[in-house]
Length: 163
Ligand SMILES: [Zn+2]
Image (spheres, rainbow, N blue to C red):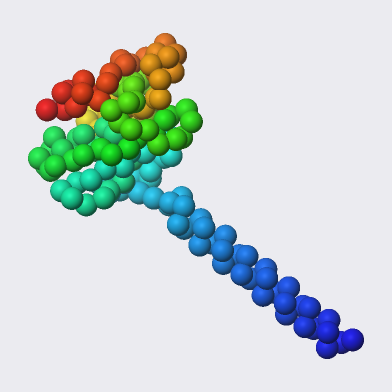
């Protein structure tokens, strides 16, 4: 009797241990700790952009950061997908509607935490400002703009403002 209960105990431990390992691995691999390839800021699921820079796959904290990288370094930055701000789903950039310069800037919020001694100023340069958020439909973008300000742009219009 003692032996079998010990065996059950060991088995249970093994199962729990394997489960914990899996949860740990899953958390790591799901990109919960992802940071921007360019600026190192945490990547928010709602503003994330993925792209290819000079042939290498990279993840950006937001589309603004990716476009700024192209403008500043002249690198060949291709944005391959952006995230719907409301739904968190990947969108093809060409099919997305972008709200530029709204009052919502997920990257700047982090920035304020990191530089608490600096006064938050709208005049201060920030590579992730003005904010760029993507939406899957013009209706959703327009509704967001009505509440948070900014301008609705297509990818082509957005890229033009970063040249
Ligand atoms: Zn960034």
